[in-house]
Length: 264
Image (tube, rainbow, N blue to C red; front, side, top):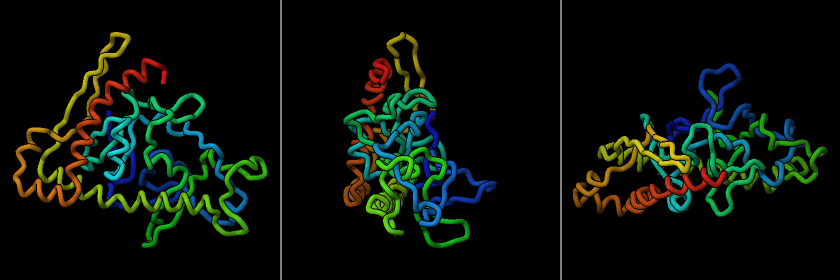
């Protein structure tokens, strides 16, 4: 069920290749373009944000800095692939996000992962270049002509990036900067061989069972068997709370059933 749905590895910079390139684009992005005043000087960001672009995302990448907030709303698991990326589970069926309603509103009170909040922007690295730049998804319905939608937040003001654009740039940069910290934690979990693949059975209100596969969690027995020096190092690194938030978030599978039964 849950595969890596975000960047190609938490530590790597996202690379946006020209149309026809072989590298797959990150989830949600269809036509990423370097943000520039010539191409986007008359464009704006639709207000309020319509989250229907994420309505079919049943899982999304999160970074370790988000665990505490995300654990209050979503199950947090690790992808069943080599990357073992932390994922927030948004629905128990492929192509179903239980936190986005038909009007594009995210569920009130639920934490919105930063991977979602940054869209349609992203910090990317052009192929063959060392520097990163700000991209925008030119195919996104959230990017509109200011003349047609004067309520939109302008991307440029007098030829320079607007305050809203700079805010999104900071959000994207923070997301990128968190990636190595997440990678360090994941690498340690993998090195210690703490992850176990699990199947989770959900008994839906309809009476039909839903079996979730492709999930990995940190095994409690293996974690408790870690040597004392490892636990001390995890405490110094700030990793111990991540494990407990991960485990506590498993209760949210039951809340997913409640959300699904309530029609979001």
